[in-house]
Length: 145
Image 1 (cartoon, rainbow, N blue to C red):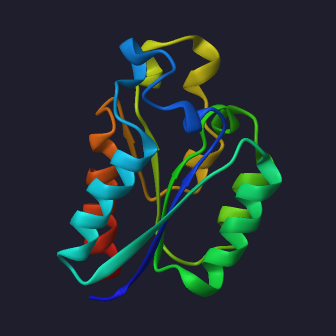
Image 2 (tube, helix red, strand yellow):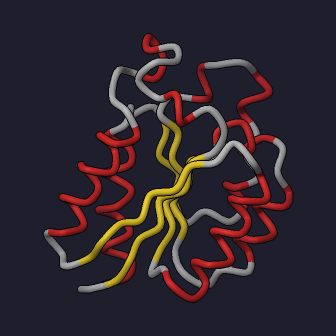
């Protein structure tokens, strides 16, 4: 198996490891990227991690994925609950998509219970901490094999 998996992250995830560690843990996005690269590398694939606090930049990455990615892992963060633009971009992408949330969003505030992205996602992983990213990469590798 070869190919590239895009790992897209929404707002405030650049602060992973620093922001609310009781909820999100102490690992950083660099730690996430290393762990996912190890999982993907075992199958001859690679990962490309991207984070932005700007909705349009995430949409642009999804558009780029149409030409460059075998699959997408996406943690849209707060855009999960608000972004029809990200949903529309994902609907234009033909490969598999897995939505990831570090915390169990269903045990949090009620506004976090709705996800636009889930309407397109092939799977949703929530509440597994940053290990959810590794699980998502492993699942994507099965889907694109």
